[in-house]
Image (cartoon, rainbow, N blue to C red; front, top):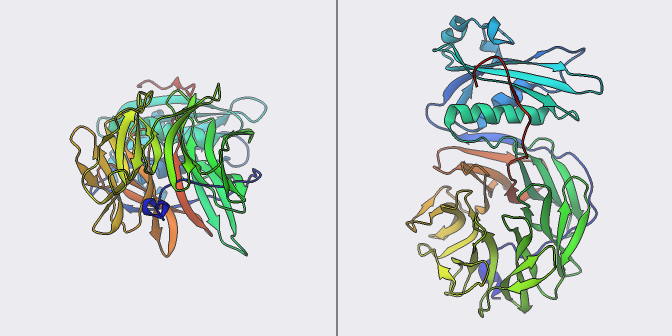
Length: 446
C-alpha cells in the first residue's frame, strides 16, 4: 500500500528480445510564440540522378517551425527557388515578408552512396550571409545532416544551441490479447526514423541514456521479478547489471558514464538509493531511511543527487552528496506532491511532476530560489525529461483518450504533441547531443 502512495514513480519494468521496426511519431504544434520569425527554406537542389533521398529543406523547415519560434514559408508562396547565394534576388523575399533565407544543394560526393550537403543562411534585409557550410553525409544519413543544419541555423538566429539532431527514447504499450506488448523505442527528436530496440510481453520502464548516447539503461520485469540492463543502442548487445531480490529500478547514468544511480529494495515496499560502479560492479548504499527513496537524478557535476522520497509524509524532492549520501536536504516545499526530477544541463533548475489542487502538471523548480513554476495544465502529466540544450521539456500527457508524448518550452510559451498510431506512449528520455560533426565553412560568412 505504501508503494501506491508514490505512484506514478518509475520503479519497475520488463524486456525481451530486441527487434527493429518503424513506428514514426506524428507531431502537432499546439502552441507557439505570438509572432514567430518568418523564414524561407528553399527546396534544395539535387545534383544526382533520379530524386533526392531526403527532402532536406522540409526537414530543416519543420525543425525550425516546431521550435515555435519560426514560421516557415510554404513552397507554394516562394517566388523563386535559388540553390546558392549567387542566385538569390533579395527583392523576391522581401516581397513575401521573409526575414531569413536558407538555400542549398545536395550532390553525390563519391562512389558508394556518399553525398555532400551544402547550405547558406542569409538575412534578407541586410543581404548578408550569416552561415555557410558543407556537411559530409555517410551511410545514407542525410536526414541527420539536415537536423544538424537546422541546429546550426537555430543557434545562429537564437543564440542557443539547437537539439534537433538528438534522439529520444520512450515506451509504447500496444494492447492486444492478454497484456499486449511493450516496446522500448528510439527515434529522432522529431519522431522520425523510430526503431523498436526492445520488445516484451510485460511492462517496460525507466529508459535512461548514457552521457555519450551509446547506451540505454532500463528495467526488466519477468515473472514478477525486476532486473536492470544496460544495452548498446547500435548493436543491441545488452548486459544484466542488477538483479537483486525485490525492486531494481529507476536507473540513471552519472555524468561520466561510469556509474548508475538506482533504487533498490531490501524490505517489501521500501526502496533506497544506491550507486553501482559499472566497471568494478561495486554497489554502494546512499540512503538508509525507513521510507521510499527512489528516482535518483544526477547534478551535472556528478557531486550530488536529487531524488524522490516520502520521508516527510508526502513525495518530495531531496538533495544529497553522491559520495556519502549524508544529510539529505529537502528542496521542494510547494504542493502536496513533487517527484520525478530531471535536472537542466546547466544545473540551475529541475523539471518535475508537481501536484497542487489534485492535478499532476509539469513544473520547473529554480534551485537558487526554491520557486516552482508550472508549465502545463495537467491533469495527468508525467515523466519530464530536459532537452540537452535546456530549452524544452519532454513529458507524457493525455490527448484524445490516449497517452502521448509532448514538449513544452521552459517559458511555457511553445508546446507540441507527438503521437504514434496504436499504443500508449510513456516515460520519454531525451538523449544527449551527438558527437562532433565534420562541417566545412562554405560560401563566406560563418
